[in-house]
Image (cartoon, rainbow, N blue to C red; front, side):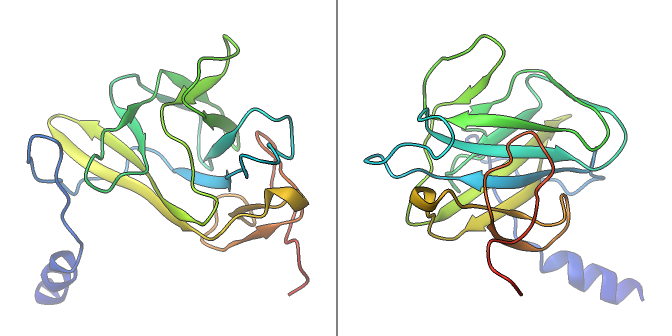
Length: 181
């Protein structure tokens, strides 16, 4: 059994920080996940309000604080600490929208300096603590169809199943697939 566990751990990819430090595999601090993604077409704007791309983070566990300086979002596999998140409190089953438009906006909104590709792409939620880096969640999202008001997300919230959602639900529970199963 120990050999199997060791073998399985060896299969997990190792990533590096900007300084070349190894990623340490330790306990996940909270059940926080990337839950919904919307990349917009720059010619048609966002289906919700015209302000840009966004990522929704969801907490499927007990209330948790994402501490500033410990949590990052990235769309660059070579820079896991691309965008530091500010301190964010997430209650049980609560979600927060992160704007990916490189702009400062509403005082209560969180913004990151990168945008999402309409043709699909990769994003990761990263936790840094005690000199170690842990990739909490990654998503390889498909091409987006913001013109039709669709997003891509987990349904139900926090699950492993990703699908096109019927309409955007930032900060609210995902309401189901855009297409019947």
